[in-house]
Length: 160
View 1 (cartoon, rainbow, N blue to C red):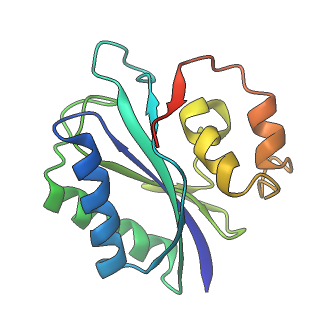
View 2: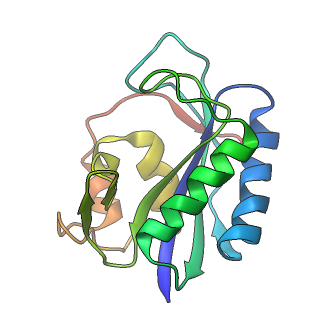
């Protein structure tokens, strides 16, 4: 079994409903959710001229291999109505694999751990809530250490 941490994000439509629907579909298609972080309102990263996001990290356990998890995630995103129009553009749902146990994957369509997670406050804030002592398999620092060394100062605030 793998410990899998997924980042959910939404900045279009009913953002709370999109996160809830994504969680429901993840439980149906991949695995039962073990824990969830709070939901955070976050400034957009990479492309600033768009609405703020709601982000949440969820923790699941599954025996699925990383590529299978990615395939299920893409199906879920499509079912919810995700349209890939522009990089870092507005979207009703975005689901990223942040970590899958201590695995490292470097394939053209999938990199685990997520290659920019250590640079992003909107990722590390909810991840630090769940697993502050987890050691990043490549950077060899805990999530808390990465969080405390962040240079990203974009707004992230807990909403529930």
